[in-house]
Image (cartoon, rainbow over all chains, first blue to last red; front, side, top):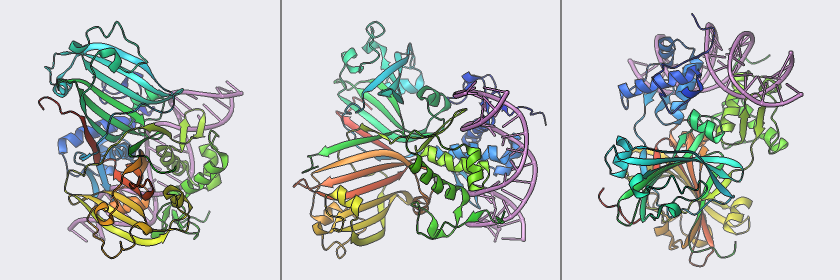
Length: 253
Length: 253
DNA sequence: TAGTGGTCTAGACCACTTT
DNA sequence: AAGTGGTCTAGACCACTAT
């Protein structure tokens, strides 16, 4: 039994999850969680995970540590536990139509603080979303969302560089992008779901990791019907709720 | 030290939280959570909670048990922890406009299973929402939401009895209510947020308690602008995501 | 009845903030 | 330096499921 310290390092293969490795220190349960993701991928949907006691032996940790890793994966919907039976690998999320319309802007003195603006190649997943080759150039803009002084979310935007070649020059980090682009979205496809904050996201927003977040994921296209941006907006689920008025107003509120 | 069993009963004052007391057994951390809610209400927003070790002494439980109770309250946004500093009582949720439009109906063979249909008086909170006296009569309809065979949510609807006096006769539990009412909503106000499933909700939906859920809360009014229903829809956050198409279609997807 | 996850204890050291 | 929350251990018993 070597462990005088309860912390370790992940192998230096770079960030394994969208996680904490930049910090240097990784909690043991987080390393277990990463390893469990590999087990999950290997076994596939519907399969039974090894028992908690077996996982303790395999990863050489206590049961409480295994349970913390499993608990986060349960909160994320990757696993589900059945008392007396076992822990099972969950299927993909179901999809439910929602019908969101043009987003009006926040209520409480909204603001944004840009933390990343870079030009790079799209890669395969983003290229597919935007219907361009994987070596197409995009801008990646990452901004912290504010409500007054409080950090409440994190927004990551990918824009086709061909649509806005001079973005890096005339960039105003606090303004909506649409005004700076000359492209007005004519349509979009959007998804809303709950996720847990990764350690990195939690750090940037200034909240605790593994807190449930409200995630919206949007792909917008212009009047020509061709996609030009992908936006991923993450809001603190414990601090924000979204409201709408649909149709006609009420009588006397 | 009496405790040979790790479970106890809450005082028989009825359900304290929207919880498990019908079961008879309450986990110790859950009883602590209920007591913490009283502490939170007493101290008020921004105050520091007693330290975890103090709470251990006060409630005569171990630190792990206190931490489980606190962890759930953190996931619910009632508390926030700051390492090295303390645990603080959080303020109310912020509100953000969302703009949801007419909800299209689910994708995967949606269904409903009614589990409660009762006639009763509104009470003060519901009365205020529907703009009627607290002794006005309402129907309360509670239904499990299905996607195929899978339980994915729980919907609780309150309807002004004066608008649909014969609901109990001609009720078809699997159909949308609007068709059975003769009232078509002309407008609504809706809120979307993330919450954790209570033990009762988790039991009815067949999921684990304290799982993040997507909650929509809607008040609808008729052509006359007078509210007639309040609907609270709770969806499994780990199993569902909501999607929309806004505006014009894309070019070639 | 055996095995699983669910809850709980008592104690330890670490990282961080405050004084 | 002292005190807080964060992580971890080793072990125990309970509730539930499967056999």
